[in-house]
Length: 115
Image (cartoon, rainbow, N blue to C red):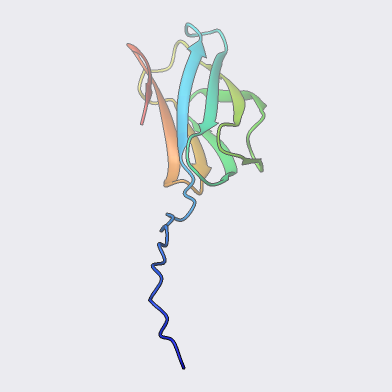
Protein backbone atom coordinates (compact mmCIF):
# COMPACT_ATOMS: atom_id res chain seq x y z
CA UNK A 1 0.00 0.00 0.00
CA UNK A 2 1.04 3.62 -0.51
CA UNK A 3 1.97 5.64 2.51
CA UNK A 4 1.49 9.31 2.90
CA UNK A 5 4.46 11.46 3.71
CA UNK A 6 4.12 14.03 6.38
CA UNK A 7 5.22 17.54 5.50
CA UNK A 8 8.62 18.56 6.71
CA UNK A 9 9.19 22.05 7.99
CA UNK A 10 11.88 24.05 6.33
CA UNK A 11 13.15 27.17 8.04
CA UNK A 12 14.84 29.76 5.89
CA UNK A 13 17.04 32.35 7.47
CA UNK A 14 16.72 35.64 5.70
CA UNK A 15 20.01 37.49 5.46
CA UNK A 16 20.33 41.18 4.84
CA UNK A 17 22.42 42.29 1.87
CA UNK A 18 25.97 43.37 2.66
CA UNK A 19 26.07 47.09 3.29
CA UNK A 20 29.16 49.30 3.40
CA UNK A 21 29.44 51.99 6.08
CA UNK A 22 32.25 54.31 7.09
CA UNK A 23 33.27 55.81 10.42
CA UNK A 24 35.83 58.61 10.72
CA UNK A 25 38.05 59.47 13.66
CA UNK A 26 40.48 62.37 13.88
CA UNK A 27 43.67 62.67 15.90
CA UNK A 28 46.68 64.94 15.90
CA UNK A 29 46.80 68.68 15.42
CA UNK A 30 46.53 71.34 16.72
CA UNK A 31 46.29 73.70 13.80
CA UNK A 32 49.57 73.96 11.90
CA UNK A 33 50.41 70.34 12.76
CA UNK A 34 49.21 67.30 10.79
CA UNK A 35 45.80 65.78 11.48
CA UNK A 36 45.34 62.02 10.99
CA UNK A 37 41.90 61.09 9.70
CA UNK A 38 41.26 57.36 10.05
CA UNK A 39 38.52 55.79 7.93
CA UNK A 40 37.13 52.52 9.30
CA UNK A 41 34.85 50.19 7.35
CA UNK A 42 32.06 49.50 9.85
CA UNK A 43 29.49 47.86 7.59
CA UNK A 44 28.94 44.29 6.52
CA UNK A 45 30.17 44.81 2.96
CA UNK A 46 33.32 46.22 1.39
CA UNK A 47 33.78 49.99 1.53
CA UNK A 48 35.09 51.41 -1.76
CA UNK A 49 36.75 54.82 -1.46
CA UNK A 50 36.68 56.58 -4.81
CA UNK A 51 38.53 59.72 -3.80
CA UNK A 52 39.58 62.28 -1.23
CA UNK A 53 39.39 66.06 -1.64
CA UNK A 54 39.99 69.19 0.43
CA UNK A 55 38.66 72.75 0.46
CA UNK A 56 40.01 75.98 1.87
CA UNK A 57 43.59 76.23 3.04
CA UNK A 58 43.84 72.51 3.69
CA UNK A 59 46.24 70.17 1.94
CA UNK A 60 46.78 66.44 1.89
CA UNK A 61 50.16 65.22 3.19
CA UNK A 62 49.45 61.57 2.44
CA UNK A 63 46.43 59.70 1.12
CA UNK A 64 46.28 56.04 2.05
CA UNK A 65 42.59 55.75 1.15
CA UNK A 66 41.83 56.82 -2.44
CA UNK A 67 41.11 53.90 -4.73
CA UNK A 68 41.05 51.38 -1.90
CA UNK A 69 38.47 48.76 -1.07
CA UNK A 70 38.27 48.12 2.68
CA UNK A 71 36.92 44.88 4.08
CA UNK A 72 34.68 45.19 7.14
CA UNK A 73 36.84 46.27 10.08
CA UNK A 74 39.75 47.48 7.91
CA UNK A 75 41.14 51.01 8.11
CA UNK A 76 43.06 53.55 6.07
CA UNK A 77 44.51 56.97 6.95
CA UNK A 78 44.59 60.38 5.29
CA UNK A 79 47.00 62.94 6.78
CA UNK A 80 46.10 66.60 6.25
CA UNK A 81 47.41 69.99 7.29
CA UNK A 82 45.17 72.97 7.95
CA UNK A 83 46.40 76.55 7.66
CA UNK A 84 45.99 78.04 11.16
CA UNK A 85 45.45 81.54 9.70
CA UNK A 86 42.44 80.68 7.54
CA UNK A 87 39.00 81.38 8.95
CA UNK A 88 37.95 78.24 10.88
CA UNK A 89 35.06 76.30 9.40
CA UNK A 90 36.10 76.84 5.79
CA UNK A 91 38.49 73.91 5.75
CA UNK A 92 37.01 70.54 4.83
CA UNK A 93 38.26 67.05 4.08
CA UNK A 94 35.73 65.10 1.99
CA UNK A 95 35.98 61.33 1.51
CA UNK A 96 33.79 59.91 -1.28
CA UNK A 97 32.72 56.28 -0.88
CA UNK A 98 29.94 53.80 -1.61
CA UNK A 99 28.68 53.73 1.99
CA UNK A 100 26.17 56.54 1.87
CA UNK A 101 27.97 58.87 -0.52
CA UNK A 102 30.56 60.78 1.44
CA UNK A 103 31.94 61.55 4.86
CA UNK A 104 33.32 64.93 5.84
CA UNK A 105 35.53 66.53 8.46
CA UNK A 106 35.17 70.25 9.15
CA UNK A 107 38.23 71.70 10.85
CA UNK A 108 36.30 74.20 12.99
CA UNK A 109 37.55 76.56 15.68
CA UNK A 110 36.63 74.18 18.51
CA UNK A 111 38.34 71.24 16.79
CA UNK A 112 37.49 68.83 13.98
CA UNK A 113 33.81 67.97 13.50
CA UNK A 114 32.89 64.76 11.63
CA UNK A 115 29.67 64.75 9.61
